[in-house]
Length: 245
Image (cartoon, rainbow, N blue to C red):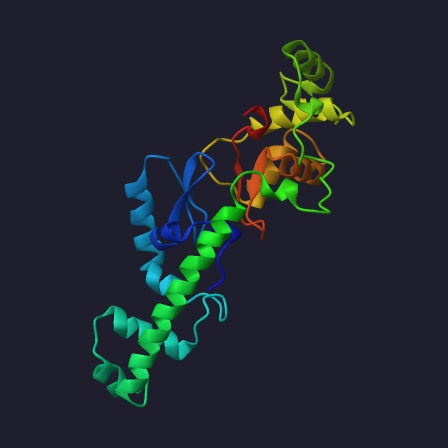
């Protein structure tokens, strides 16, 4: 089973539940279906009904992504059931009980190492560590919070009058100037509901009603973080206005 990037971006506790809080909504980490932020019961019921036990989902991901062989996954199933070492040998998954004991020790060792690595990784995510990486060049579009985002209400109204037809809800022409571009993108982002996910086809349908060059609009909405998506493009959603924080 191939899981979306939002799954891999989540913490292990959310992976166990099968859903996580993403940009003001709850999102299924298997299929990207969205739920209200307070609807944990609905999200949990969906995961159980549509995807089953997350333990099995985690064991069933593509080979190599969970670090387990097929035989090891079968042993883990029996261990979770509380089966004895002798039962595991009878199931033909190990040659002797000593082998199973050794495997249990190996699992505990892997768990200790995983905890240490997660702790180390946590330090890396404290503060804006990415901006401190040597040799990193900021993206032209969105990496730096700068004067492009300092837009007054009068400037915003003027740009919208020039480039956006409010009555028809369409873009007259797409501006090239950065400030103007951001105003139009922010207005386009309002066409998407917060707290729900969209397929790429649905995103295209919304954008096509506003402007015929949907690939340009979609690319800029992602680049400037007015929309987010999973890496394979199977789900999109409107983000919080990060540049106003």
